[in-house]
Image (cartoon, rainbow, N blue to C red; front, side, top):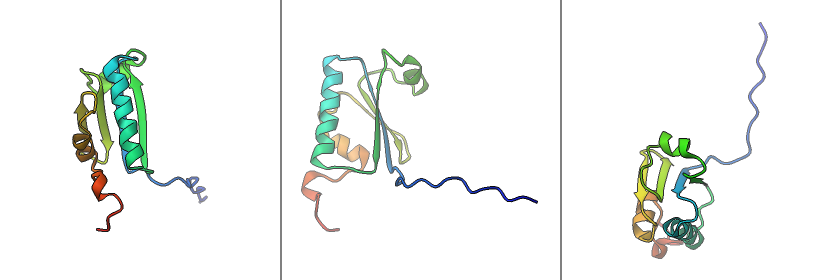
Length: 111
C-alpha cells in the first residue's frame, strides 16, 4: 500500500466573487460598462474577486455557453445563485446590490 502525495497547496485566498462581463467589442455601451465596473471597484476595492471580460465577437462559444443574448451583460457566477445584470452598468446601486457590495456610505462603517 503506497501513500499518495498530497496535492500542492495554493497560497492564494479563495475567490468569493467570480464575475464575467460580456461585451461587444469596443461599442459605446460596452466601453461604458467596463468604465462603470472599474469605477465601482475603485470606489470600494474588492480584493477577493475575479473578473474576466469576454468579447462576444472574439469568443462566441463562451457567450453561447452562458446563454448571453444581449451585451453588455455582467454575470456573477460565484457566490451562487447566478446573477445577471444587463446593460451598461450605469445604475451602480443596482450593480452593488446584485454583487452584494455595500453602498459607499457603508464602506468603513463597523457592523
